[in-house]
Image 1 (cartoon, rainbow, N blue to C red):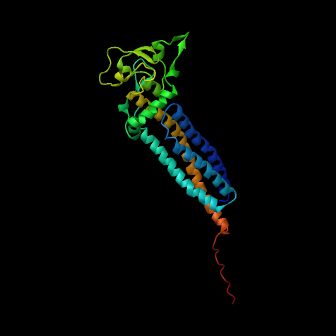
Image 2 (cartoon, rainbow, N blue to C red):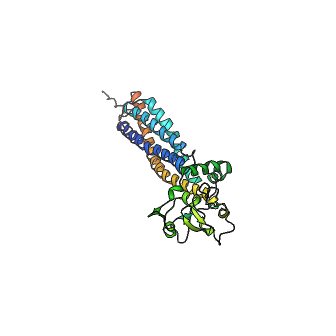
Image 3 (cartoon, rainbow, N blue to C red):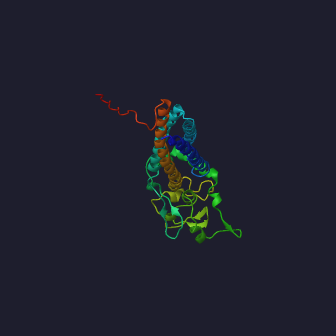
Length: 285
């Protein structure tokens, strides 16, 4: 049991290192929120959890190495809530990104995105008029559609070349009209209207060749944001699950180390029986 202190110290050092990917994941989501996804509140819980794990790992490392019972108690107490928060975040991330995905289009490498394929709290928040005005403005300012332009010998790529591009959800949903509108390709962000569009798809009338408008008011654009968020969150959640498993293992060993520290503080003998069998007295005749 004495070796548990050294083991918990080593594991907490490793946990400190593992907090870096969690914090990095939050920073990555933050950068995507500023440049791509444009949903700017979802990354903060992950950043807070990453910083908390980093700080409490240092406390656990010090408590184990110096056999400081108070630091070990503080470590176990706070780590319990960190583990609970991380479990809650993982469940929340999967719950709000559970439904919806892009639809394949015949003859196209990219997917089309439809808002009706999504539902739940995140969809309602993104689709709300007050919140969407901020998101669409962010997408417009990011120039993500302008960055789609590809030229070959000074000329735009052909329609066949464009159809074989693997567009991101936001590029597909916001920078071009839905495929079922029947528009003809001119270049990446300019399309000529034609017959055969789907009447029930209001995005067909919302599309504009104005480079400041495009499909930023389309439901497909909202669906593209949701599709991009789902991909981002699922990537980060894989790292979170791995770290969660390691944290639970560290927590269990930390409980053993805490009991060991208390035994030492109380000067309790280790590995010895607390009661010894009384020797029978000899009878002298």
